[in-house]
Image (cartoon, rainbow, N blue to C red):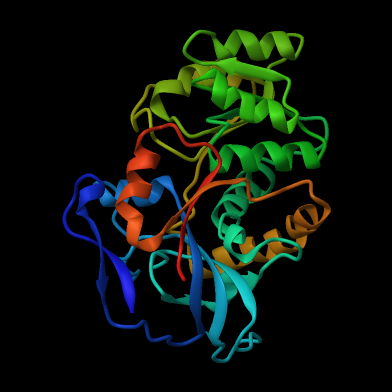
Length: 324
């Protein structure tokens, strides 16, 4: 089959499409013929040599796909069914073997190509905002990087559950994405202090929940932006991995900080998350409250161009790779 191979750490030029051996499903795995694969920051970090795949995972990048079942193995899936899957790797390929628990039927009413933009974003947002942070109706939620795939999904889920999203982004165009979704507190982090802006928007209370992709650079300011009893969830380290934490400030607010990853979680945990996504997010997709928000697609053969576009920082929403 054709698949993307990473030929050493570096820029998009290290990516090439080559003929490799077909995956062979084992145990409880199913085999999927891929229709489209989502491009995520984790793929970029893997390409740069900064985020190797977990032990036993495919070295082929790609953490989410849509497609059709080729071989359902011992699962309840049957050949030909349209599905989406959350992966530890292997998505940039014509076929991929995935534990059956990480596969769910594609949501109704969504084009199967665009559905590839849902598994990783929906699983990340639901597991962190709802299962980890307990976000609920009326909560004020600060979302950093709100125009990317995770950010857009976080905004949509927050609004659908009756929470109030406040967002940061680095340009008026990116803030316009959040505005189009119905967000009112739009913060340009290059020109505004998000701590003060969130306090103003919440009458001095601060955010009940913060979803952060920046990490160390924002730690102290995130704590300052939290409300009493607030929950900070760190899911990315774009601004570094090491920072000093003022425990007095954290304790004074009776707040909490959690750091999570999705890719390296045990299969059983991923299966539970995907089951929760199917139960809770798919109805929101069916109602139109949540959409994949795909803004650009590239053929698999143009994977280097797709990564170059992603690296430019100009993208909003989801970027997908498509297969014929």
